[in-house]
Image (cartoon, rainbow, N blue to C red; front, side, top):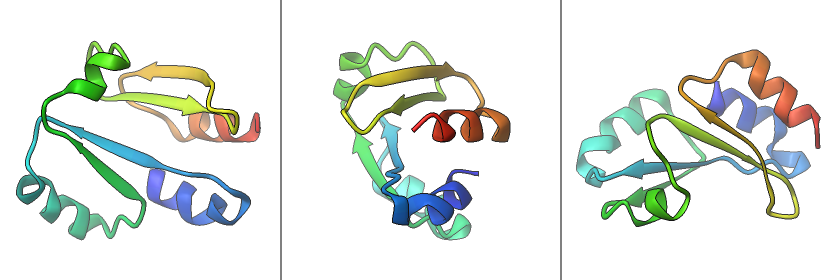
Length: 90
Protein backbone atom coordinates (compact mmCIF):
# COMPACT_ATOMS: atom_id res chain seq x y z
CA UNK A 1 0.00 0.00 0.00
CA UNK A 2 2.76 2.43 0.89
CA UNK A 3 4.62 1.83 -2.38
CA UNK A 4 1.48 2.43 -4.44
CA UNK A 5 0.67 5.56 -2.42
CA UNK A 6 4.22 6.83 -2.93
CA UNK A 7 4.21 6.19 -6.67
CA UNK A 8 0.85 7.90 -7.09
CA UNK A 9 1.65 10.98 -4.98
CA UNK A 10 5.40 11.58 -5.02
CA UNK A 11 5.16 14.23 -7.76
CA UNK A 12 2.87 16.27 -5.52
CA UNK A 13 5.46 16.16 -2.76
CA UNK A 14 4.50 13.10 -0.72
CA UNK A 15 7.45 11.56 1.10
CA UNK A 16 7.32 8.06 2.52
CA UNK A 17 10.03 7.02 4.95
CA UNK A 18 10.16 3.57 6.47
CA UNK A 19 12.15 3.15 9.66
CA UNK A 20 13.41 -0.31 10.45
CA UNK A 21 14.02 -0.72 14.18
CA UNK A 22 16.89 -2.82 15.53
CA UNK A 23 17.57 -4.89 12.41
CA UNK A 24 20.51 -5.07 10.04
CA UNK A 25 20.32 -4.06 6.38
CA UNK A 26 21.15 -7.62 5.32
CA UNK A 27 17.98 -8.86 7.03
CA UNK A 28 15.60 -6.36 5.44
CA UNK A 29 17.17 -6.11 1.95
CA UNK A 30 15.46 -9.25 0.57
CA UNK A 31 12.08 -7.89 1.68
CA UNK A 32 12.79 -4.50 0.08
CA UNK A 33 13.87 -6.17 -3.16
CA UNK A 34 10.93 -8.58 -3.24
CA UNK A 35 8.42 -5.73 -2.89
CA UNK A 36 10.39 -3.39 -5.21
CA UNK A 37 10.23 -0.61 -2.65
CA UNK A 38 11.59 2.69 -3.96
CA UNK A 39 10.97 4.99 -1.01
CA UNK A 40 13.69 5.57 1.58
CA UNK A 41 14.17 3.01 4.32
CA UNK A 42 16.10 4.20 7.35
CA UNK A 43 17.88 1.95 9.83
CA UNK A 44 17.35 2.65 13.52
CA UNK A 45 19.64 -0.08 14.79
CA UNK A 46 19.93 1.31 18.31
CA UNK A 47 16.19 2.20 18.50
CA UNK A 48 17.12 5.80 19.30
CA UNK A 49 14.58 7.22 16.86
CA UNK A 50 11.90 4.87 18.17
CA UNK A 51 12.63 6.10 21.70
CA UNK A 52 12.62 9.75 20.62
CA UNK A 53 9.19 9.35 19.00
CA UNK A 54 7.96 7.22 21.92
CA UNK A 55 7.08 4.22 19.79
CA UNK A 56 5.44 1.64 22.04
CA UNK A 57 4.72 -1.06 19.47
CA UNK A 58 5.27 -2.01 15.86
CA UNK A 59 4.09 -1.18 13.36
CA UNK A 60 3.54 2.48 14.16
CA UNK A 61 2.82 4.96 11.38
CA UNK A 62 3.27 8.71 11.71
CA UNK A 63 1.49 11.08 9.34
CA UNK A 64 3.45 14.31 9.25
CA UNK A 65 2.30 17.42 7.40
CA UNK A 66 4.36 19.68 5.13
CA UNK A 67 5.31 21.83 8.12
CA UNK A 68 6.76 18.84 9.96
CA UNK A 69 3.94 18.51 12.48
CA UNK A 70 2.64 15.09 13.44
CA UNK A 71 -1.03 15.00 12.44
CA UNK A 72 -1.88 11.40 13.29
CA UNK A 73 -0.21 8.36 14.84
CA UNK A 74 -1.49 4.91 13.96
CA UNK A 75 -0.42 2.06 16.21
CA UNK A 76 -0.90 -1.24 14.43
CA UNK A 77 -1.82 -2.00 10.85
CA UNK A 78 -2.81 0.74 8.42
CA UNK A 79 -5.74 0.37 6.05
CA UNK A 80 -6.05 1.80 2.55
CA UNK A 81 -8.92 3.94 3.81
CA UNK A 82 -6.77 5.48 6.55
CA UNK A 83 -3.96 6.19 4.09
CA UNK A 84 -6.34 7.89 1.68
CA UNK A 85 -7.95 9.89 4.48
CA UNK A 86 -4.64 11.12 5.88
CA UNK A 87 -3.12 11.98 2.49
CA UNK A 88 -6.24 13.88 1.41
CA UNK A 89 -5.95 16.16 4.45
CA UNK A 90 -2.96 17.86 2.84
